[in-house]
Image (tube, one colour):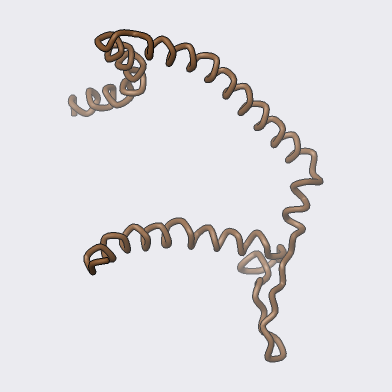
Length: 133
């Protein structure tokens, strides 16, 4: 692979590492640590004592998610909402897609435009709002 391609691939890789993987690793580390009344408000996951590096993990935070009825109700409510919205999208989307596929080429363009227009409305409103400034 030519040297220029490495640079082109490297920039998005560094961007994703800095702004996605690194924060995700920090949050994962905090979630596996025990709560503590200190600054920072959690214990260290990696502890160095007696010339050995110890990994001290606390899975109590994750076990609490399965024990507390508040979290269980929230999960079940989210799953119910996802199932209902998926069903409604399929109920509306498949007949519309079938009708567009069976329409003539000229009509397909018009129908697709009618479907996409509501998503553009917010952008159009913002553009018109900025025009007055």
